[in-house]
Length: 185
Image (cartoon, helix red, strand yellow):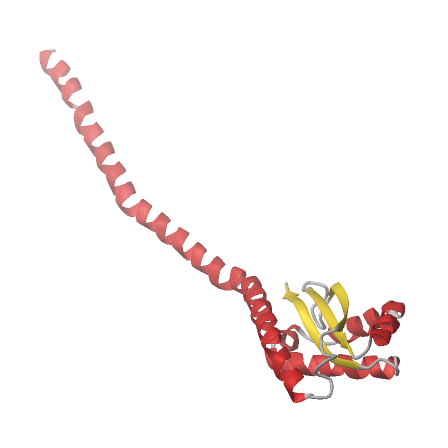
């Protein structure tokens, strides 16, 4: 019986050692696998999901800066309207549009400033606010996300907006169109 007590006492010790050997193996293999999974999820999220929204925000801030830089060059190119450039700006704030071919899944949030030649033109645009917003919405909603996100295409959007506004409101003399906010999400 003495041997049985010794056997009983000695048998739990080796089984505890086997259990304790399994725990370090689990930690040595499982923990790095878990960390690798976390890193993969982080990079996938950062590169595919966050970059799309951050890219549009960064593009809009870059475009704001480039629009500010373009203003002096436009005013020097047109010597006859240098004094009136930027004096009478009609603002259309926070226009939300669904770009073409997005089925309502993407949004464009923009604020536009129309640089008018005279104060009378600005007052005229203010009185026809609904028409101005309709033209802006129709032009921007006809463009795809790829077109809207291209910096070079944005100049043609400005030209198209100016042309349609002059066609719809003939006495409106608009010097330039400025995007003060341009966010695609």
